[in-house]
Length: 452
Image (tube, rainbow, N blue to C red; front, top):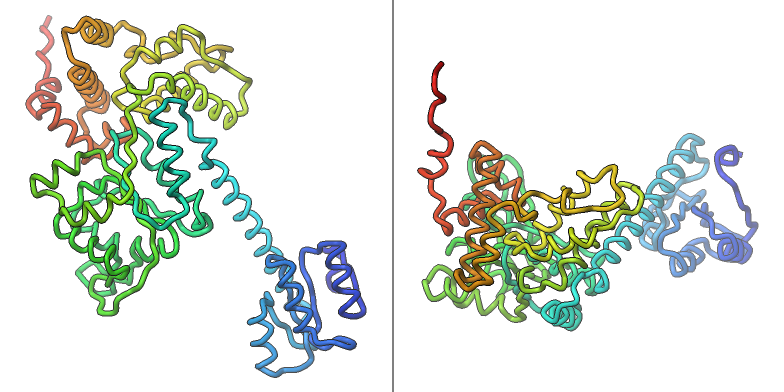
């Protein structure tokens, strides 16, 4: 009488009939009395829980014994009401239980979509180097072994880390990603391990660190080569002992976390220079996966471009659009200093500029790909042997970074966002390529225009 205006109600007079209705109809919620003819409602609850973990069961009883309520919750009841119950309370409890069920179903569906997204068949690439990577991911994904993923910026190291996680038995647990290069040294330790209230001046409340959040799951430490020696030592202890202490705390916290680390730096060289701990290097380099740059896997460029385009078409619900042969050839000629990330950004631009078109042509691509910029001469000089591939790629990267700086009025944070990298990574690349302050400061101060 209370619920039927809002819900379809199925009734059963005893436990056996109730179980039969449950199995046949598959209801969204069960109201179960503790006292039933010939049996105990708690026994029925156990059976329901063994057959369905998600369907909420609300217990109803005339007894006010605390133990009965505790047992009901222990066996998996969603809630517990004593008779005579308040009508409004019953409505509210049912409504909340159904909302919780809907949320669980949404989470399950989203988790399924995420798992599907990072399934092996969604990793794009037919080149030999990438096929070897996929085989290794499949071999090591379902273990707790630490993995080190190396490769240039933009090659897809985080995608590999997520593929390792979502193809493992930890797939339903947290997968936490932390970019070690994006945080200042003063914050990285607190971010990793958390802190207690009052541990330092700004610690106004307890903070849970990424290790604790990733418990029973995976922690992806991107750009691990940027960690300071002090943080490296503390990370090594966590990997060895499987425990840590919050900043300002005294109690060790045990964690079960699988570590996937990544870097675009040469850790061997950093170890030789004394900038990276050798013992930590051996601890994280148990399984090594090297992602080749896009310029070394030319047969994957068109596959990736078509994949990114199809994804945007699906997201925007646009009619199908494809690349022209000339556009694919333009993509294939480009050396891709920004690797897969740069390719995805350029496909995004082409998709936007081709709103009214049925085909993406070279006219929809950025000028840097059309051969009307320095790319043509670099391409010719490299193939003619007048310039090494490494030198050409560095020159290309230098040109792109300078262009990004010009477009953002030389604000490095904005230029880094435009390029899809961190500000620290941009500064590192500028230093490597010799882009100094004087160079772009001069560009900001052109000759004054002649006065009339």
